[in-house]
Length: 194
Image: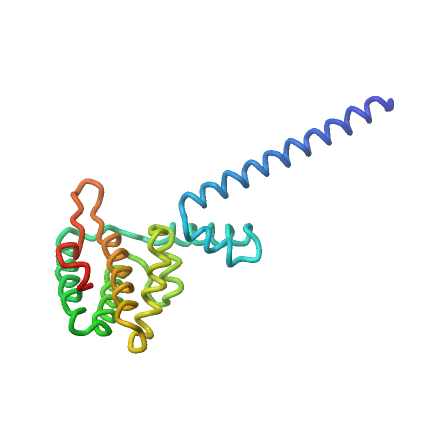
């Protein structure tokens, strides 16, 4: 074979490698952007904690795959009303017993998650599953859970803030399907009492 044919083949291989590398880089950037948009603050937390951004993204992709295998459902309106009523009771109890109210708030959120179809056996897994649908409140959920677990040693303001975090997640979990009008839970009670 003439030398010029080998040169043309080599150039074609180099061009193909460059095009492939560029396509892979664009694909990675698009994947990163999609994950950043979907997970928001959870993406940033994962990237800061992981050894590499790629490792963080791999974990987030795994969360998405796991989440896709779950059968997450919206609550029927009667269940939402029932849970909302229970929440108002827990919120009212906060004034007299902040520690007990935090424990009950955590239990109530777990019950709602179970009814929605989330696995609830392990808190860390629960937080990971929640991060797929509710990435803006999952870190607050972790913080609230930590305060609740050590509530007897927490200041009242820490407990109040934890309760507010729980309420934010609770409202998102109770959010009705798009064709129904949402009603925020617990907004009628004074913020200072929660």
